[in-house]
Image (cartoon, rainbow, N blue to C red; front, side):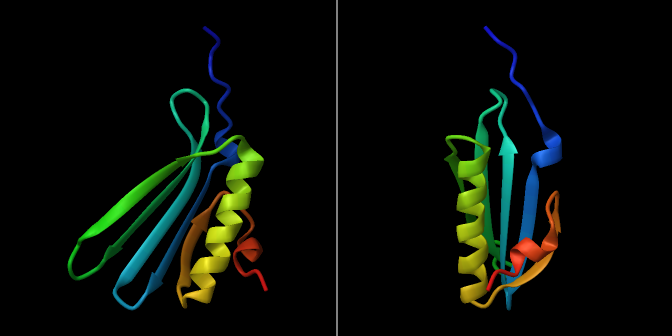
Length: 94
């Protein structure tokens, strides 16, 4: 069994909010070194929410999915509230 090759420098995390809604998205590696896109959303008042985990073919696939989410959040009126691990200008795609 080969050891996973972790690269935490490439991990990314984004946070948005719109009114009472919050949305978080992270691109990280799991215990096996596979790239995973984690998405969480909830309401601030209700505390109810959900999460989804999507296994990515590789880092580039995860970044492509992340860019699609960035565009969708902006289109739906969410405001970028915080990020880590990536250039913030990527979050403001035209």
